Length: 256
Length: 252
Ligand SMILES: Nc1ncnc2c1ncn2[C@@H]1O[C@H](COP(=O)(O)OP(=O)(O)OP(=O)(O)O)[C@@H](O)[C@H]1O
Ligand SMILES: [Mg+2]
Image (cartoon, rainbow over all chains, first blue to last red; front, side, top):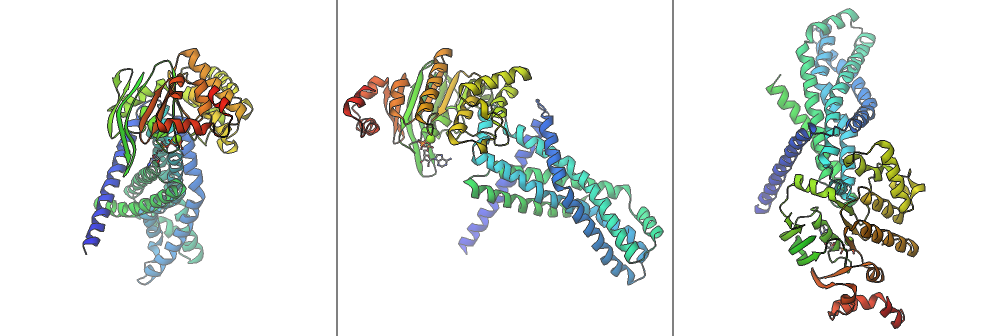
């Protein structure tokens, strides 16, 4: 019993100290963002990395999610003859929730994990120490470009995911289930407000920052050789994914 | 001048440094020697602030740097050239980009001037042909030489080299040691070299400090070290010449 409490206590302490470390890394990143030199080339390289790497998987996920939602919603709606609402429902779920959440999860898997692995390898092979020794701040050099690349690219990818997902829903709804195309589009326009789109983008922005900070934090603090880098990468993906889902719930219930 | 006063450092239960007292003379080449695992690399990392001591002080040119903030260290470190034991080259960059890195970051040289300087540094360490290779394509000795070129790129005032000649063939060992020696002499640098190569140290060092069980057990000129009565020092020197002719041993 006592051992279990001790275990819980340690778990709690570990959680608090990690959350604190991540918050600190976030603040340091913001502080270094405004400091010259501005490494524009590194920033573009990271944008390309985050964007290009994740594009295909984001498009595929969004397409099939849109198609599945259309099927499921149609089943539910047809029970009370509300098939005409299909377009609006599909678009709303995508724009508000699934677009940002699925995109962020996919970017976490592709780019967040890569950030943890890359920085982790640099840590255990003393490359981060080498930066410090050469009087280059590692947060400035490594974390700032990755953070902003994710903050910018995840919303962009989310917009693409929204569009592709809606196209998937249209495909299933109109082509397969024979909902009238005009009504599908009209209901979509009626039901989706700018506010909904904005809230989705806003979420994506936060998730992008979240996954970059968690990936970088885990890599930056890796230790223990190749095994340690592997552990850091796994933990980064798990923690970032859970944080995105919890964060989504919090933002949905509190803000929108 | 670098001065270490009563430096202690433990990793968990493991006491590595147990009261290091050492004055590293300015403008001279000092060798730090000792068995594998005694804490030579740990000691060197303290001098540049990568590790913080549990107790004791570090003075650089009379200034106590023990409690320096990250920002203060960052400024101070521009005066240093540091060679990691494993090289620590950036593996996302080519050899030439690695050497150019500190120049891009801290010098005001133009692109052309940087390229010239990189070529110069690489040719001194004999790596001009490997300039466009990535670290993963290099041999251990090539990595070490590339890292050495990077450490010398900014023409530092204080050089800290962790085993610069380990893993090189005998011909390269001599030429790299000569390079370090000449650079140090020419610019009157303060140099610290970690090494376990007794013959090289005896020839190249101005000053030698021998580490054993977390303390400096002997220090002085090569001549004084050779005459040391300390049992560990005697054993350490003796084993370096094991199998050699006794006369040879005495002459190095
Ligand atoms: N980051 C660390 N965490 C835990 N222990 C460490 C760490 N760094 C070094 N040590 C321990 O400190 C001791 C000294 O290590 P160090 O690397 O300084 O040895 P060394 O004298 O440089 O040896 P070598 O000649 O083989 O390079 C070793 O026993 C090592 O296990
Ligand atoms: Mg060592």
